[in-house]
Image (tube, rainbow, N blue to C red; front, side, top):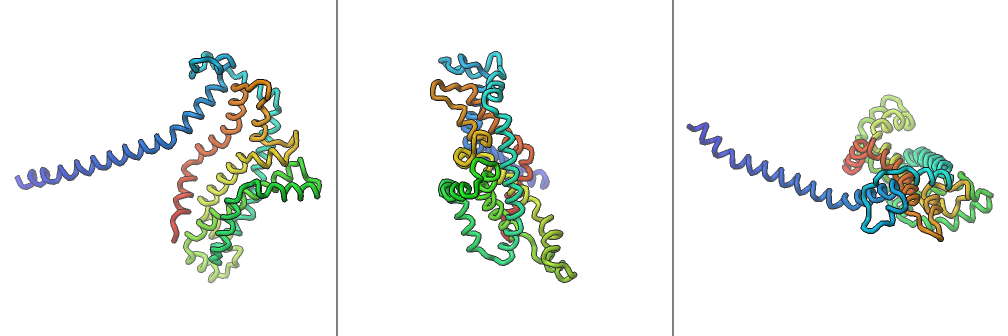
Length: 289
């Protein structure tokens, strides 16, 4: 009797706790749907446009589901606009800018974190927040002086303005969370600052390096201004090439949507494949020791 009465007293509290958990999960799911659904709907509509012929794209009422789907728009984009070359240019520029930013930003972030140069961190953040147009005229003048305009080299150098501040800022946050006792033990055992950084700090900061790499690559890949102004006809990147798909005579929604899918798909797939690494890295970087 006593056990039954105790269970009867506990059950209302347990059911109330389960109800609150379910309510929180439902509220969180609804919030995610509200925030994410506009982006998903826009992407699905863009995908629908890329898989339909131009008659269906201009039909009223709108045709949402292609019947039948066609890849003609993608073929047209690659055949008429050298999209393969522009895709390779984006890979070279974004990949090189990201690798150079890692080579510069990881040691810089480690030095800033260990010397606690917080004012320098704020300065780097200001550089990241400054619009790319502010750097455009000085960079254009400098590249013109050295004869680097309309080259991939100039684009890689220009994209360092985007990638280096991102890598430095993220790595400063991650190195500040690492326990200094491990590095001090390595120094006591005879290790130098370089060996401590290479064999102790770098392995522990792997989640932050992954996040910095992905974010730097995405921001570089999506940049339009530098590719539109500093690149030539054969050195354009994908965002600038998508703008080139627009015509003044007629707006072809199918090829335009196909070109936008080509730009979006690589970074989208990359983000989906390593989303767990991104979440772990951002979580660890947001917790200060």
